[in-house]
Amino acid sequence: MSNSSCLAIVLAAGLGTRMRSALPKVMHEIGGLPLVGHVLNSVVHAGADKVAVVVGPEMAKLEEHVAIRVPHATCHVQVDRLGTAHAVKAAEEAYKAASDHVLVLFGDTPLVKADTLHRLRERLSGGADVVVLGFEADDPFGYGRLLESDGELVAIREEKEATDEERRVTLCNAGIMAFKGSALPDLIAEIKNDNAKGEYYLTDAVEVARSKGMRVVSELADEKEVQGINNRSQLASCEAVFQQVQRETFMENGVTLQAPETVYFSWDTEIDPDVVVEPNVVFGPGVHVDSGARIRAFSHLEKAHVSADATVGPYARLRPGADIGEGAHIGNFVEIKNAKVESGAKVNHLSYIGDARVGAKSNIGAGTITCNYDGYLKHHTDIGAGSFIGSDSVLVAPLTLGDGAFVAAGSVVTSDVPENALAIGRGQQVNKEGRAKVMREMLAAAKASRKG
Ligand code: UD1
Ligand code: CA
Image (cartoon, protein in one colour):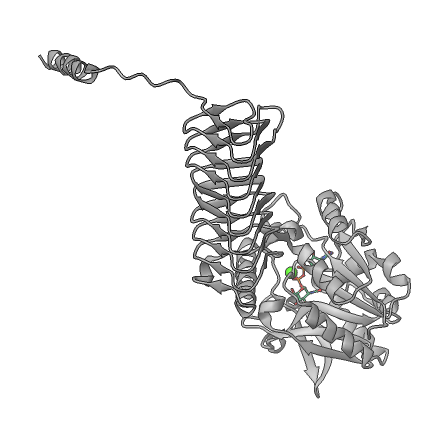
């Protein structure tokens, strides 16, 4: 099979009216990735060397997303939505060029695994002409039913055309089919729209294939893996399944999740073994955590890297470009954006560090802020190794602090600080002897006169 070529056709033209959204249905996200992106990842992993996506008119965002995920994929516009076989026909240009295998998938069925697609392809290599992926449905309503006779798949009957007896069948069509490439063009050409909806059903390919003496078989998948999304509540239940799979996978790979059901992952989260994740942590896209790090409760991470043995949180926010060095500490109510916090440095309380470098072993006092933005441009702050920034300091970028610099608490630092220098940038304190007592007497008198 490894030598056989494979075209994947992903149908994504549906508007998904039940989503009640301005977005094409397949652009809604699971684990931070559009539904269609999940399907594209699976087909690429299953060895599809050509990918064709059938889109609706004016779905530029969808076409852009496809181009990012699979640069060599082609998009084909289906102008009128006349059914799933009609949608496949929109990609005729792609399937009339020879491929050994053609997989047809729906963009709204995001959780299908590459392994399952592999199994379909193996059946084709084993001599089948058409393979249908089926599943046992808890509630089969709305799905096409797989009708079998003597162990052979003879037809798929859509809900609308099914007899009462056929409706009782719980073996359903997952919507994913595999075809011998040479067979597909004739099958699609012969499908008619003589049904209740007046649509061209891809599912009719089963009967057409059998009438031509072809071998049609089915493969089984778990219902969770093939659940489709037609509304927001199905979107939420797919998200739940996706998160559950992620949690299990991380735990199997040696990550400790203290309260797995409270941790949310992205499709691309990477966590090495022996990382501990405390409860209520959210991983946005693009996070990598190295072995030995600890992500403490209620933290939010996005496009960030946490090195070995570092601690993040509780209540920390790592925004895009945060790079936390080995053994560094990021504490509560600290936000880090586009900044490298080098090994052993500590930013423990109530700070904002953006567009910056914090040198190794530096200590950033509570409430320190980098002023990186003047309303027009972003500026960089470079803090040397072994520096000490006193609490509540404001570092006005662009700014460079040499190694070993010391900033007095409460300073507003606007000019560079040389190596090992002490910077004090604040109003000078004045003490007035005995004045507190006088003031209290004045204030008490004022209060008494009001009451009178
Ligand atoms: C389809 C199957 C049904 C199966 C179910 C699984 C058909 C006729 N029926 O029904 O057997 O059990 O999926 O979820 O195939 N699409 C287009 N253009 C069209 C029509 C559909 O691109 O003209 C796309 C949609 O965007 C969607 C997919 O095809 O991604 C499936 O279409 P949908 O209308 O949701 O089919 P179902 O009624 O769910
Ligand atoms: Ca559907």
